[in-house]
Amino acid sequence: MRERTVIDDYLDVLPEPKRSTLAALRFELRRLLPEAEECISYAMPGFRLNDKVIAGFAAFKNHLSYFPHSGSVLPELADELGGYKWSAGTLQFEADEPLPADLVAKLVAVRLEQLHA
Image 1 (cartoon, rainbow, N blue to C red):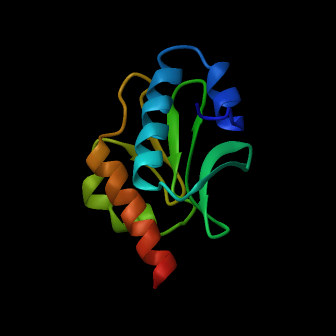
Image 2 (image 1 turned 120 degrees about the vertical axis):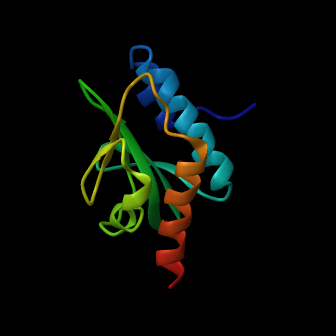
């Protein structure tokens, strides 16, 4: 059985559908980043690899957000983000509409590519 983490505590207090939508994002990030450590960074759940945060997420009153922890990931994928509100540092999405797995994979891939460049 997996040990509880601070991300479990973060998710446990969220109302539905925020909780299940972010839990699905967490699952996808764990699948894509099996070696990453779950953490809290800037008061938000995140995934750290080699002392660098690769991805993070958070719940807000009227939306959820994905954080690439790089100001150049989202601009690089601008053509993929047409239906979302975003800025260089955050991608907002609806509480009842999880980010597609293929988009999450692209977000993570670009961030990892940047770190390895």
